[in-house]
Image 1 (cartoon, rainbow, N blue to C red):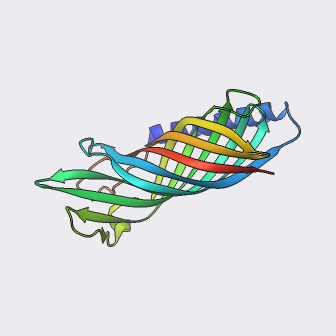
Image 2: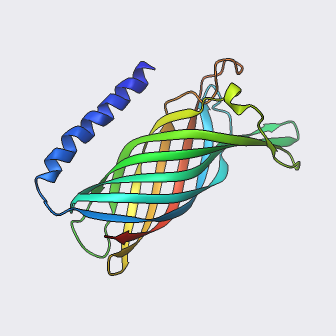
Image 3: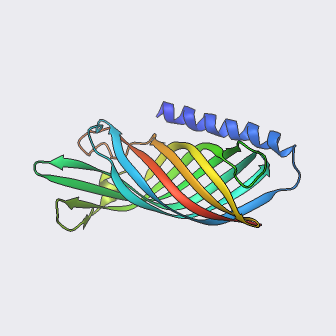
Length: 212
């Protein structure tokens, strides 16, 4: 818990220092918005490090505020499928957790202008569990009843990655983001086998950005 608070405080301090400084370099502010669709590869770690990655879907939208031509802030609202799979005998159990995930990213562009603008981004991520399912072998997926009794509904983490930005029309860009999110919160509640577990997820997504 102390480590989580230190990382969160450090993230807030970085943004507090970066935003005022970068705002001095440009008075005109640029916004962009658009949809995003992708795929996730997730598992849980720490005491459950022997689990395997499971694929899931990611969909939502993003809003970016470009403070200067080399730095911006992106907020996303995503329906994000996380989870894991684990072999049990001759079958594989697949656990799917459905989150509303809201990452807040500081985005650093490697070029100040042009049709192709690669960038690096990092920031905190806030997840809200909305339910889940368990699939055993070839059986149909079954909803996890009373999931709030077994799993924490809030998941805080840090995320970062690489973005590729291609201009396809005036004020319209195609975006490709690849990022890793490391959960700092415990996925399960202490009553669940006394395990200390966290979400670990890779996400690759494609979006279209419309400037305004």
